Length: 470
Ligand code: URP
Ligand code: ZN
Ligand code: ZN
Image 1 (tube, rainbow, N blue to C red):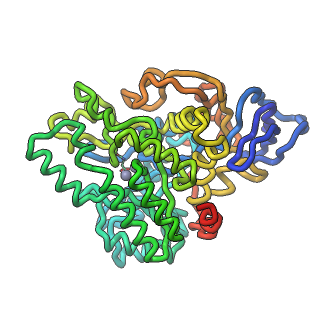
Image 2 (image 1 turned 45 degrees about the horizontal axis):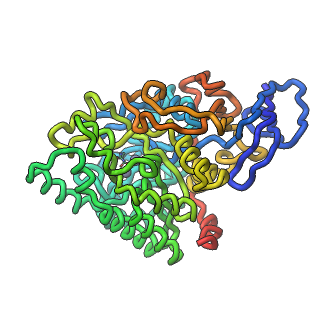
Image 3 (image 1 turned 45 degrees about the vertical axis):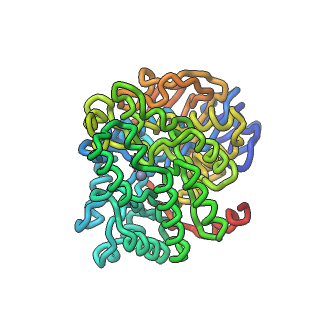
């Protein structure tokens, strides 16, 4: 059925204007005013903003990690994402050394199938480069449409890849048209510091942060950027948490290296002192990279505003406090790393960023949707409001005030990292391909209706305009 969204303020990464949208067969087919409403359902967006659906480029749903499995899977995770205004997630597919990549991808398809209520795609983890991997990667790109590879520079003896693997991944990605993403922390030095802390009897959650200092994130970020530059390749740094890493990205971009950066809600709002909460509650705030001293937040806001960082991911990786985070009682290295962020991503950036005058409304749309669509080969089908684009849309009340809480969130976890925080702005209704998933704050979607998205190859010319803005 045709739908017309009327009376809303349409916002893209470039423009803000009053307008109506006609939606037919899941696509936006007209943008204008006084559109003919014959046979169409009228949706009144009075007083609301209408954004392109959020694209979360960084999620871990149903992922085994830290001796357990993330609490949110593709069912609960994508429902929570939809409530938060996200209509596409790109999840990280973990691979196993010595095993075909296609097995891992198959496993991830099975995790999502029949469960996702919004559209989804996968990044592929690379932990080794050998003939088998090199033979398989072209199919990964052409048949699966997976055009981004993830390399971990930390988590020694688990996911960490060595420098040769990282460098060869840049070379290979450049040849194949893929974007390399890194978790940038120096895993070897962290391993030394964590063992030392444990030997000295320092087992509390705060030592997670103290053994992963910002210098080690800055160093790894700078190293990855130099490798990318040397290989003539391109780099996307996930979850930038501190000034040191943002400075390394700015430095690389000023040299003309094609380096992109993402930060996440937790690093803008929470800080290292959270890890000192009593009764082991600090474990709720264990992320890698860790939460930083508060002064870093201003540097991150400046990096978002200036374009040094271009995307805003959730790094959704949720574990219950009871039974999961508690695995690290008496040994901080056993606390599963990560937290629940998928639902509050847009609201946090809107409330703390747009409402407080730190970023513009158009920057907000770029950070939460458009730029990820461009970098990860989904644009212009996703990430904008344009004729021919998928009608993935968020009708957002910019004045709604509410308190974030585990009592009201839709994630499956038993805590909310922003518990008690007052925010302004709330998604009211959310559509994927023209169908409501959330309507008037009620879930009306169908698990399994989310579609797998094959993505286009990484498109380097986009970087030209970026360089001009440095
Ligand atoms: O602590 C985090 N970030 N957990 C998720 C895995 C990762 O490193 O992104
Ligand atoms: Zn990471
Ligand atoms: Zn992550």
